[in-house]
Amino acid sequence: MRPTPDEILHRVFGFTAFRGRQEEIIRHVVAGGDALVLMPTGGGKSLCYQIPALCREGMGVVVSPLIALMRDQVEALRQFGVEAFALNSAMGSEEAGQVLRRVRAGAVSLLYVSPERLLMDGTLQLLANCRLSLFAIDEAHCVSQWGHDFRPEYLQLAVLQERFPNVPRIALTATADAPTQGEIVRQLRLGGGKIFVTSFDRPNIRYHVVPKAKPRDQLLRFLSQHHKNDSGIVYCLSRQRVEDIAEWLSRHGFTALPYHAGLSAEMRSLHQDRFLKDDQVIMVATIAFGMGIDKPDVRFVVHYDLPKSIEAYYQETGRAGRDGLPSNALLLFGVGDIALMRSMIAGSDNDEMRKQLEVRKLEALVGFCASTRCRRQILLEYFGETPRHSCNNCDACLYPIASFDGTVAAQKALSAAIRTGQRFGAAYLTDILLGASTERITQFQHDRLSTYGVGKEYNRSQWRDIFQQLIAHGLLLTDMEGHGGLRLGPDALCRPVLRGEAVVRLREEMRPQTTRALRGEKRRGAKPNTETIDRHPAHFADADKPVLETAEENRLFQSLRALRLQLAKEQNVPPYVIFHDTTLIALTKAHPKTLQDLSRIPGIGPTKLERYGEAFLRAVNE
Image 1 (cartoon, one colour):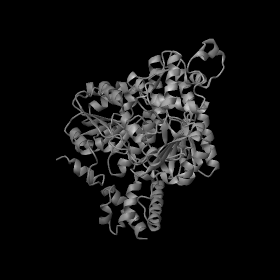
Image 2 (image 1 turned 90 degrees about the horizontal axis):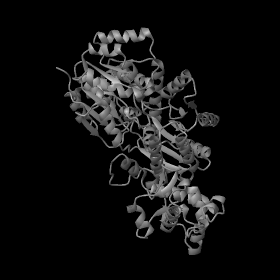
Image 3 (image 1 turned 60 degrees about the horizontal axis):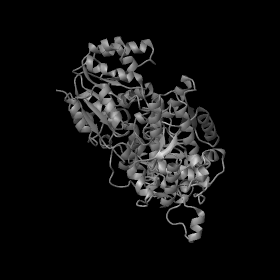
Image 4 (image 1 turned 180 degrees about the vertical axis):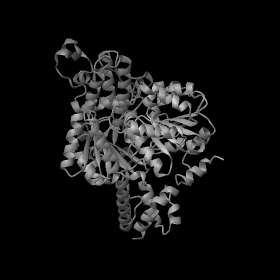
């Protein structure tokens, strides 16, 4: 008889219970059903296809877009005693031949393969002669031509349904809004399958959005105060900035490595390998780095520059805290980044429809950054969820951004847009409101408008921020059919504001100083968010504090980490494929005295118990 999912979970992977909807998904696939699974990074997606593959008869085939991801997942499975192998273009002919012979002999439980290699006639013919348990299509959002990680080869994976109609297929991703979900189902022909959508929430990640003000100093303080000995990722927009920041951090005592498409393949591979196998490496990278990275103990992700969209932000921040321990996501938000992103979109080779889509996504991201609301609520709403409560685990919740009634400012801005024909951008409208004397204003006779010069209580920088917030509120939209001018949003939003029937809240730091002084008001509420890094370090998540309560526990944990690193180096594998930090913390808390005690620790299956049990028991007892 074939083993049950519960038996595989305990006997192979060393866990006693499923998480969330894992069991429901696994039993559906074991029974032969197709599925689309949307589950946040770190939520246990891999087990959703690994366990069915081991329960069903035959070999499971996993389609994965990145060679590094395959290598890590294969090594992690082998540590559990699973016969897993990879087949990709980076392998030499002799190594690939050995894998192919094992496949033909039926000696492979899970085969990881790139989409390019899978679609070769020889591979498809080979699989046609094998007994297959399932196909798993990882990072399934790559099928979306409108997504941020599009891979054209994924469009051809519909051939699996044609060539292997009786083999269940499970597509998995952590990042897909409603249109992308529909595209995955359509392109992969999963219409007869079941869709499993778990919450997109990553509750262990603490989100921070901080206005840029001397960003190098902000980054250095953040790392020095909160992540001195941690692994993490710093994302930058350009290759040159990646190089500069990596060199600058190295000069300040951090182990920081650059990663971008301009480096040689050998250098990128070397840096990625070091990031995966060492405990205290910071990768400074463009978005060329990261998709599919399985390193679970990334404690922080910093966006030194603005990401491209909320989907990209969610995907990139999700590389932190895959082990479920507290982690930080810090975004440094600069107005110049918005202008640069707009310029890059306008100058791209994409057609107008794609450009409009990217502008809308950028506007949604700007709204996320400029908002005073709970960050997590905005993220979850973007992916179609309706959270009932604020998260109390982001800067907006822990360190509320004070606001004031900015309805009059909003009315002036909207009126200026209306009276100039809704075809000019924020900079020109600001000139109108400030009463500037320019050739264009004179040419269009806009100095005769009733809104000319009515906004002098704010300076140019403040008006720029106000326009951003009005875009965030949906009161103003960028018109891509013209020259990027601002037009009013839906009547249902704008009309009540113009009539004074609805209140528009603006960030407190935008309140005019003169108005506050005239009223004799003192600033109430929290300090502006720019001070978060300097004055409120406690509001950044600290991975070890909630779980390691004493100095003795911390010493034991560091000792176990050192042993894990030693064993990993001996095998030339990443430390986390031996044990995750969560397993080491459980060891620290439990103080096991015997192998039987050790076997009860989550994440220690029989194979790992046999390989590492005695060594870790000695470390605990010593």
